[in-house]
Image (cartoon, helix red, strand yellow):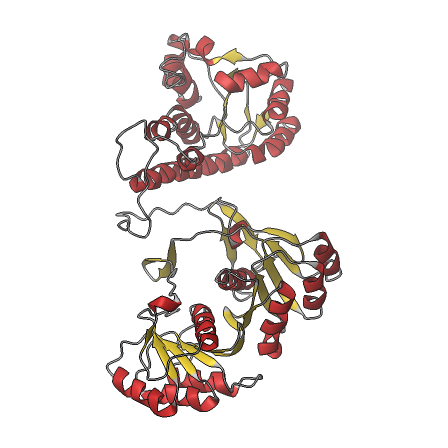
Length: 527
């Protein structure tokens, strides 16, 4: 599938001018005529390039504040006519339409305008590009004869191919460019539809645009998802599974993180990094979460990251080996010195000091990832035949919102420990039981098929003493037996949602054992 076609005329109209001048110079070097619009033409002329204005090509001036400039038969006829169709060739010749063999277009940054603080509804609408997508679709449809370039990252490769083929491009290249182009217009239309759907009202047009509260808005009638490929991965959860990472383009969260060093991130690394990062963000104080297979084997807060790390590791140093660490503050040299003693796969933090980077540099395979926090109001999960969409679990409770249901109230220390355990419990696979004390997990019972088994497993695997700790349960106790196991292990206070038909029996058991218990009225299942 060679089918080389000569490029004699190129139409350039771009918002992102990165690499534009260099690419245009390479085109001009092959005698390719440059036709351009507005700011793009100005940028090329300032670089000393000969450029024909689009109005010269069409014989019609740009009008309506630039809304109409490329929507013209001399543009779209020049792009769309099939070169090997005699009727098409005769028609364009009759009307004096010149062929356009390459179109270089990227689109108005619609989402950036819509998200700009104070952006008005009129501005949002005005930044819906019409001519750009039309040219992209025309060129992509006629890919056999026209090369459509929508990514600045392709400029260098195309320049090399033009040089190798004396100003021509292969059929394979034109086909790959066309596929990319249709994905660009699809993503662009998705961004417009998704953004407009969130706007509560178009009135008044000159007032700052008002977006509906994501937590209260209706779910969309059509779920439109368009994430560009961020990177291909070596494999998925297992070597026989292929995998790739796609990003929403915000450069936030794990998908938008910056890897500073270490081996290539794997599928499992990314899943665990997401789990530890989300848990670390739960804490207002310096906090550290150590994750193994998406469950916390240790989590803690402290006066410093070093203190928080030591406490998190102390809870379960055996499971922490080969784990992934999430940290909610900059990592300094003292913390790095201590963390470097343990074999871990990856560390996520907002930043690392130069001293910390230097200490970790000796561990060549250790992946360091800097992450900017992201607000994820909704989460998607795939099931066979479809997708599930739900609000993210952002629920929290304060001390004032807790309901004390036992004769004994929790002490101030117990209350602080209960609220800490409750935040950790949200990030443990259900059925979840978390034993904690003084801003530190003592042990975690995760993912068992019954709540009593999670309580037993957490108590059984504890390395630190459980006496005097507290416990959190992500859902209610269906019977008193789970509570009794926790109390027998040494816990003196328990936090749970409540809501079981057996609540009265569970409360009676707690009173009998002298355990303080509070209800949150909120469940934290995690599947």
